[in-house]
Amino acid sequence: MLLTLTTTHRPATDLGYLLVKHPAKVHTFDVPTGTAYVMYPEATEDRCTAALMLDVDPQRLRAQRDAFELSQYVNDRPYAASSLLASALAKVFRSALRGASKDRPDLAAVPIPLEIHVPVLRGTVELVNRLFGPLGWDVTATRIPLEPEIGGDSRYVDLRLTGELRVADALNHLYVLLPVLDDGKHYWVAPDEIEKLLRSGEGWLAGHPEKVLIARRYLAHRKSYATTALQILAEDEAPATEEEAELPVPRRAPLAEQRRDAVLAALEETGAGRVLDLGCGGGALLTALMKQRSFTEIVGADVSSRALEIAARRLRIDRLPDRQRDRIRLIQTALTYRDDRLRGFDAAVLMEVIEHVDLARLPALEMAVFGHARPGAVVVTTPNAEYNVHYEGLTGMRHSDHRFEWTRAEFAAWAERVAAEHGYTVTIRGVGEEHEATGAPTQLALFTIDEKNEA
Image (cartoon, rainbow, N blue to C red):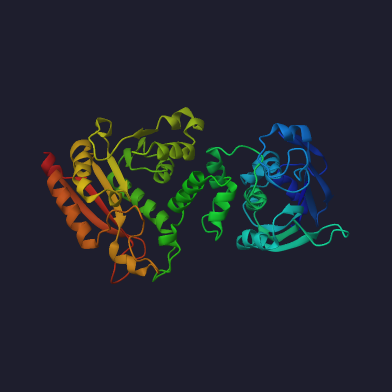
């Protein structure tokens, strides 16, 4: 099977630096299903083409887990682009997929003219356009006809993509979407495939109109995996109920990003070094905390063991250098119970957590966090129910798992009561674009221990 990548950027032979493959050589790679070759059928200053060819070994293919509709003996795997080609691409162009180029780092970071050709790809013309069109490509997909004596069209297309994109973006599009179009991976899909999807889809998958279909097919229709991936995308980028809705004023960044930035800013105000992320979920905030060197000890706590597993994969804890690994811990605990492991921290964060707790259990959380753990500061964020009127089609709460959503007055009353009962002072602010009548979409409370009470 074959894939070519062409550029007319001048000098076009700079493509060799971006792919980390010299245009004057034929490069050979052993892959689990055969042998991959990278060569340059043309390499001039005006035009340069890199070709990736995968020669599938039938015996190796048989050794792979049989996940195909066709027989393991007679099938289209050696010819039609699929997850086999995507896997070869990931091995051969590993640095290029990351956007890394030691010799041309500036060029790797900017869009250049590109043309991609995949001569044989399983899929429909309509689906190819739905997948690649929203990503900035001009798509030409031609149905491949059957032999004349048979007549009609086959289930394969000849695909050409043209556009100005970063080489890394182009390769990541292919890495994800080739197996999506084929809809049949050649290997067992394990939970680490979620991380691969999120890593390769960074910057484009969350906003793709077909992200649900992409997640389901890429993760081999494993419902729990796809659900987890979509939840993380919503957490990291833009939840459909909040970020895709038409708001009264434009936003400079997704609300999820603004919320994280507001929490980080509040923590910086307190001067905290040792921080708890209570109800950390899949680790969206933990990732941001790890990037700030001022946070010397970070603990993520959640009642869900599955959420903690996802957070560990996202943070790549097992691959962190020792110094970094020593900064982060994940613990399983219920926030409505007292836990001595949570005591003695400079600050704690409850980001979009309290609204997931039954109102009857909220006093237990208050006592466990503000009374027993008693960090020096607590940052709490929660939706502003008044703002919900701006989300078109939203008739209830923003998330099906929310037990309640408060108005600004209700949140202020709760925060002031908690502060008074536990010896804190509190300030409240909005997060996100503010509307004159309804306020901001998210409300944030910063609790700090009242030094008078401590004395």
